[in-house]
Length: 243
Image 1 (cartoon, helix red, strand yellow):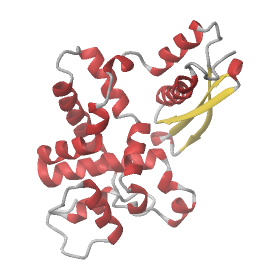
Image 2 (image 1 turned 90 degrees about the horizontal axis):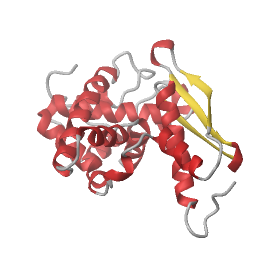
Image 3 (image 1 turned 180 degrees about the vertical axis):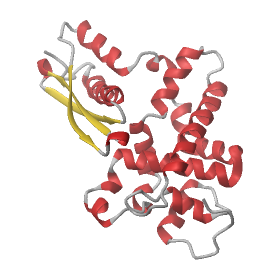
Image 4 (image 1 turned 135 degrees about the vertical axis):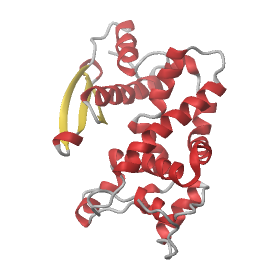
């Protein structure tokens, strides 16, 4: 890992990402490494991703602890889990210009890697890890607050008290509809680092939605969350939710 500031000119795409982040790296090589996928170079972002995962969890925990002073551990844990899940990280990465800054092999880029949820989520965690290495926890926490602050401040903690699969099942049962089914529709990656794609189906409503995750369980939760988002949008006066 780089140990001193890199004086070479920064790639304009990575420089643009730095502006999006609102943090200037003392060692720009760290940021370049954080957006380097393993397909691009043997020197890639997975170690920073490992570190960033822990830093993100701590930073989000700290922000939630301050924001929701009256909430118990269980509620805070569930909210944190939703905030740091792959889909949430993917959305944040898209909003802040990560696809343009990613360093991918030509084959990975042609295959749509710059838009892939798992790759973008990993890069976001790696950037948080790089910020921690470059500027310490205070800098990393400030970055997480800039990236997630609006979501945290607008969160209704009551809406996060159940996991997505449980909430979806209860919503359907309340309307006398059968519970959803889940099936693995695809797996990608090597055995030690697989990404699962799971399809959630509600046959009574002719609806199917997919989710991705690093385990079948996480993929099922993501598919259920996407199904819930659709059902909640239509489950209102004049909506279309019906058997």
